[in-house]
Length: 258
Figure (cartoon, rainbow, N blue to C red):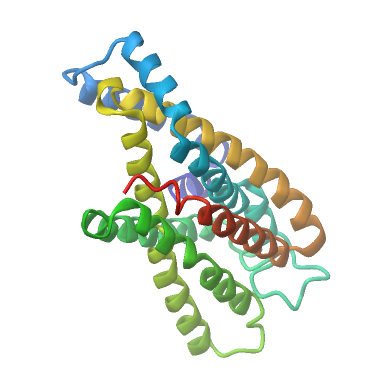
């Protein structure tokens, strides 16, 4: 959101402004981590080897890759391109070219999504200790088909009224809050697999690798599907990855550490 508004007011100077914000963030991060406890490389490698040998983590990794691919589908450059370009032959798709006349509003849409997702994670931080991370993970996965259905209905709401779109958006937002439980639940399971002796670095290292690979796969898939089916292609890719994640999650039942 901030980047789009900086571009609106500063033009090409927005790149320098964003670089300055990154530098400020790095300084604040360094200042916050200055007095934190650290773990040695030996402990980190020991925790990493222990995590790789853990059967539950090996079963969780493919599920996580599928979910991270969905992140790449929707947060990569393809979505922005589709929503800010003229709809062309996809006039029956409401979301295609939605912000062609005001591309800076894409940032506001992303901000809204971030707020909804963050609200969901905050609520899940209360419920995960009660439900357990494995059960919370499964609940988050089962909400994905509902999110896909809501997005499909929204994308084909060209002839719907504004009130209907608000209802569809609100229901989809609630389902996004439910599905957001996957991330903290998966992180909790990952931290348990790595062990406290290895520190948070080993866990975040595995998380970063899975996130990066999944995001790359999702971005490539979005480019392929988006060029053929526009927004419907992204929804189709999401449905495929969500169903695959749910099927893979069934294997975790017998491996559950709880």
